[in-house]
Image (tube, rainbow, N blue to C red; front, side, top):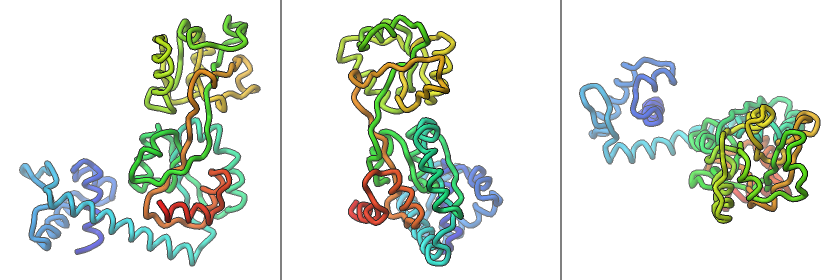
Length: 307
């Protein structure tokens, strides 16, 4: 049994049993992968995959267990490599962050700037996506840390740490009639075309539930995962916008006005997510500690060991 065979096995599973796609990801030949999988099945004296001709159609029950165990082996191999790097090159390496547009644009810049000054030899990469995609990237090992609302805390494969709470505001064009109201109501919002986050993003379900509890049906004309997209269409006059308050910049969004809506909707929590059993480099612990108020790098490690 070779580690290469386990790597091939894991990638085939990730690619939905498509050997051709797995070969492209691994930069090898389809025939080479097929041969190694066949050799592994011969060694184990069982079938890992069900087949229809040359096409893989499903994992066998035994194959399912083998894929799961192979994933744990590969995780430990990666941890061994990281442990070696930690002691030989403790202040250099790479850090891949998966997060949403709002977090990347409005929350992370100051933290990333400080981190880069303290760890100049660490190469940073930021992958953006919706919260579900952020969680998946960390679960599958494509990112070291995930930062998002909701989905991180719902993943059994991740340890989640609450980062901060935020709420929403309504962005309005200048001279909009709602600007004359001292405190907005759900009924007022429901009377206007509304542009807000996609329902699967950033507490969208909580927004709908707030309207429903009040017996109201909002007139949602557009949803997006990007706060800047929402503000763009508000500027075009398509409707009023509901965004995270941190996504409003007084200078950059000078043609818009922000009104508080925290009394209308429950707060949302942004979480930091880390893969269970992953080896955490010193600089990753330092980065997480910068994200989670009141926790040191050592306390982050202790928290993860408990979870």
